[in-house]
Image (tube, rainbow, N blue to C red; front, side, top):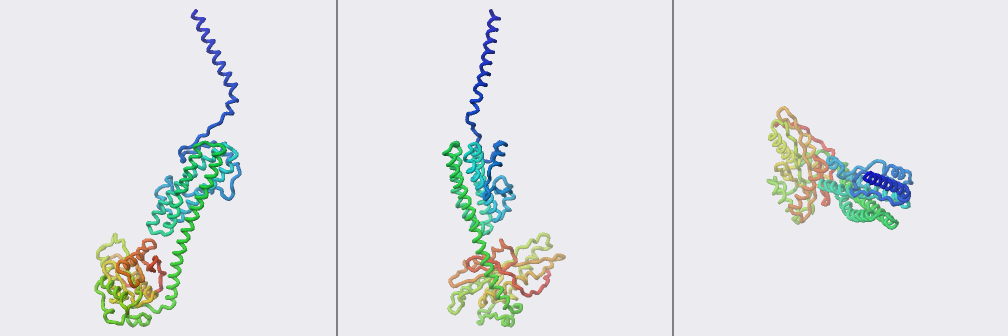
Length: 441
């Protein structure tokens, strides 16, 4: 009896297996018509999951000519780039990076539109669009951070670009979120049309944002160039009519057409910087005084005295030489030096005469060499020249002088900067005579 049961069990099993195999062969062709669900990236930075066959299909499809993806990958500011490289990018390089990602976004939008009649290809293009969207937003966020850094360093172009770029990022993020929601719903005729519409909106926002930022940068650059050209033109005219080297003496000043103060009190030595500002206040408020008075500040540039045998003595010699040279060239009634700064009253001077005086002092300081033991040392100064007006108080004047001198942090020391009340600009170097000499420390 038992053998018969075993034989019956084996026969039943064989019959079931045969039925299953036959069913799979019968229903196999029908299963091939079932819809295939493509994988979507939950992480836009994930590796590419598109098959090689689909890649070949995309490459063989008609590609847009005017809005094609650039062959060279744009330089990215996003997290994938080394942090050391981010800090080196200038404002033009940041703007170039944004424009390159804008072009990638535009190309992805066009490619999506061209694939509308091919569901499988459209699905792949949708994934690609989503990834490019996220890359673009990362790029713009990183660009705003870098433009912030450049703005803090005094780059006016970066500040203008930052205002435009940061102002447009909100709309781009809103549309990108809507694109993500459409893709998550799944693709059909309706959602494909919605996705194409949103991709075009995203592209237009990116184009408008990039173009507006570039225009803002161009406008600031034009304003700076115009200011520098104006200052250069004024000084060029002065240089053409300039006479011989200023020596600070009354006779030499008369030859140069520079008037010395007529009253004895104005010609008396200035005892302190406070007295300089008191005298300036008197000049600006006096009924007989001048409407505008030119004022300058001279500051000794910082030196690296590492390795100098006696750095303290060297620094003291430089500051003493600055005070002595300022007095010799400008007169005790005009200049007062304390520490590393000198305040200079240039009442009675035209702008051209005042600029030449300051250039004379700056270049003379540069021509002096300091002998510190067996070592030789050179020192320089930076000058700030401003115009003061009736009603200006001391904090206003000092703030304007400070702003003019701080321009050296951006453009370099050992120059003369003029602040016209709007913004500071460097003056072109004038040709003046100097007397090279050596100071023993």
